[in-house]
Amino acid sequence: MANIVEPSCVNYVCSCGYLNPITKLYFCRYCLKLRCGFCVCHEVDSHFCCNCLENIPSGEAKLKRNQCNKCFDCPSCQHTLSSRATTVQVPKKSDGDGSKSAATVDTKPRKMYYLTCLACRWTSRDVGIPDQVTATGQWPECEYSSATRFSMLMEHYQNVVQQEKQEKQDLWRRKAPKQHKYPNLTDRTGLTASMIRRQMGLSEKTAPKVKQSTISPSLSSDVVSELPQDIFSKEINLGNITTIKQRLSHPSVQPSTVNNLYPLNKNLSIKRSLRCRQCEHNIVKPEYNPLSVKYRIQLFASYHVPEVRLMKCGPLEAGVSTQILIKIINPTLHEMTITIMDLPTHEEESLIIEEMKKKSDKQSLGPLASLNSAFSRQASLNEEPKFVDQKVTGTIALPDSSFMLQQRDDSTEYDDDHQSSREEPKFVVWRRSNKVAVELTVNPLDCKSGDEVIVGFSMQYTYVNTATSSGTDKKEPQTHALTSRVYLRIGKIK
Ligand SMILES: [Zn+2]
Ligand SMILES: [Zn+2]
Ligand SMILES: [Zn+2]
Ligand SMILES: [Zn+2]
Image (cartoon, rainbow, N blue to C red; front, side, top):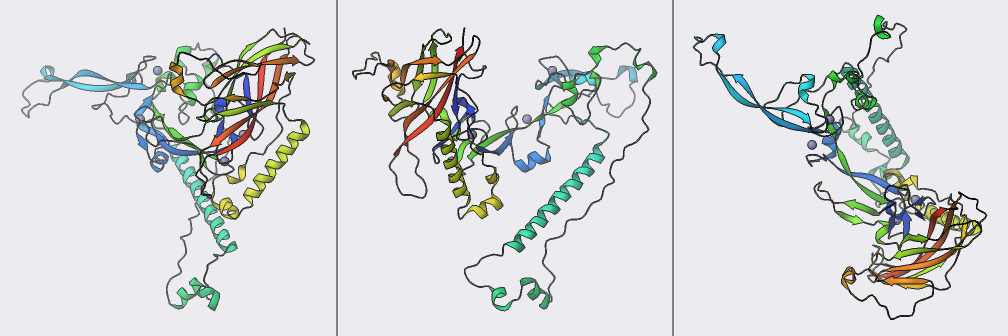
């Protein structure tokens, strides 16, 4: 818990070579590799409002500019605004006999609503927005001067995008003619569909051309209005001036004084699914319903890869070896055999990288490659494997044998006796269900006082894969020996 906000002291090497704490890594059980945020495709699954929890289809969300119509944020402190009811006296409608004078008009109580911030006490009355009759009333939208210009620009660029898309499609169609199993009419007679249509007297069936819209470009001008005379002499009340954050949270208006702050429509949140870039399998997929916090697929590394935690470290002095105690936890439902080995040397690492590059090239040259490159989302953006950008400043005396780690069993938490009958290797300090504490000896390498000691090791572990690949009929779980490289920042030299 202590290092939730601090940088993690135990980092794993992702298959691309970046170091990440285990909490930020995913595990693809089809490639059997660790994947970081760069090695997965991020896709938007659904849009929803985090305040009213309404699910909004992506098309509608685009129209609404990714904002919720009903929920508002405080323009002053960005907290969510709440509606408050108040009773006001409104004049009763007279029954048509205009006998009563204006001074004695009957009034009746009426419920009216306004928006208020419970954090900073800002209310919609502060800026003169009239109260509404309903709690989810149609709050007036703030108008801004360049709205028409902006919508013109938007329309223009949408047209440009559509035109480019159409041209690309045409080119693609011409370049890659459809391969049919049976020869079609064109192959046999040399007639194209459009020629036949013309011969039959039908009109050409082509996609409607996108209209070319022209807009006048903006021009710079030398004429700038003068600053007010008293701009440098007038005293400013900083309480009336908006902060940069307040200004930028409303980019279309950017109010400079607090009396122009208008309620901000709440931005929509998204549910994201993650996909392995190499094999295109889903790695994380949340449930569609915004009320649910569960996942349909959740291949987080901490559910599949043994977790290493640094428990204790002896005093660190230059040139003096010390003991560290690490805890290794098996999160899976299968027993694991763990071997702690040296980190690969530079040559070994370059071999690993070469092999991975070859493998990804082979995959991208597969039969589906041309289809993939035309349609898939980010297939060409595979993260290139690279050397780990971390020097070790200490060596670890490796344990002389492998050791077992029991499967996770939540019921053992309630067991009284934790005694195990098996004979333990010397370096195992204690063992409790799926956890084991291992003592290792660390030798800091030519470190000065104040230098950080970083050590690393390769952890080989057996992993039982219960996922069945679609290509094979094998239903039995397969056991693999996987390796993860782990770097530990154990502390600073005294
Ligand atoms: Zn990665
Ligand atoms: Zn909402
Ligand atoms: Zn507020
Ligand atoms: Zn994968």
